[in-house]
Image (tube, rainbow over all chains, first blue to last red):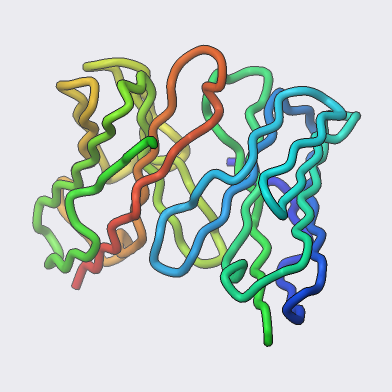
Length: 112
Length: 114
């Protein structure tokens, strides 16, 4: 199946830095979601976006549903060591009610 | 909080064995999914179910079957395990209707087939 293009693939940052990652597609989506997965665990839902242009925050995390409906962005402010993990975007296409298309993931490493 | 539990965190089976992976959710969700996750290949959908006794094939159903006899429980079955089925298996659930895309995942089962 299709995978969404997610960038960067990996990031090494220092504690306190801000982080930005994005997800793009050649087709439109009705919903965008962002998940975080820690080693050996299942993905945990961070943010869900339902409208083009929507900007939603969850603590230090902010995500946006792109106006074209073909992309989404996730920002993490003032990173801390527990932000380490793999971040996945996911989208719900117009043709399916709940099946997700996943991004390739961004691996985040935070150094002290 | 939504809770999705999987029967085992780690499992080691021999080639040819029949393997059952069970998933239970406590939020009365209509939809349930089974994925496998492999390095470099991401999350791939094996099967999903929109209702009790309903099932639909995902992207990679070969070698797998599923069972959904009760709304809260969705089982993945490997009829005859093979080494290429060594993987991390993830179950997820979501409600129907508004917010149907918000899938909630279990902790995963890391299956090794020797």
